[in-house]
Image (cartoon, rainbow, N blue to C red):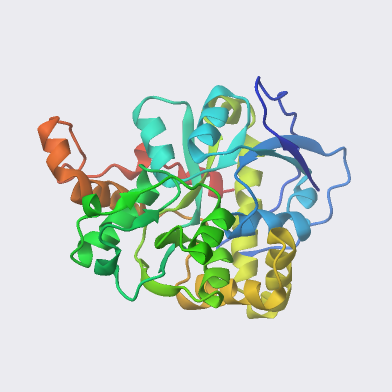
Length: 339
């Protein structure tokens, strides 16, 4: 059972949480009776509905939360940075954020930790109204915000194609549907888009310019560590419910239902959602099949940031983890996936 609220000014009421145990074994979870007690609630901060939240939509639709005694209350926020702040402040118990924002918050001492990777590869495709990346020189482009990990990834794509990102006009356009409209109107010439918005843009005449399909944790699941210390069982079961959803989506028998869930969740047609399934699940396997976090998935966020901003980092004498031995477990606690 999942309910929805929108985060507004002021703290969100603290969630209560009681759960039932379900065994997790590798990618296959054993059957469990439906939780018969009084379900309790956990607040989950999230962005607007999109394929980034596909596993959450599946866990809701398929009862993976309820059979563990969870009533997940969605807390929608407007940006990933605000989402991480909501979890860090205790306004939400957990959240699905962008990896770079999470790493930055942890580096600054925020009481949050990653318990699993929703997307261990990015589902961002560079779409444009030109035929090649170098033709974006002098043109208006966006990755949503004007800075941050997603923008760095776009810059990295430019760099690999021989285009200096400083020779483009970077604009902020955080809403994916607005980016599609701007591309259609010719007000924008290049944008990073996620399913299903990338397919909508391509069907409107835009072109696919590049895809980055190496490990790069786009959306980790995070919890407030103070809340998790008091609600260890609850935090584990939340994580394991989403791990079950990850295993479920890779089962070919669930293909049609998974597409139907995404179509309903994002309010698009079945055929557009199907393109998202082909890309995310069948082509690049962007979803972590068991929610584990690969070290290179977080380290690549640091590496790409350094590749794009090396000059300014050196100029400001900022320390980085490159070449110093990346510590995965500073950011990630795998014990939430274990019984």
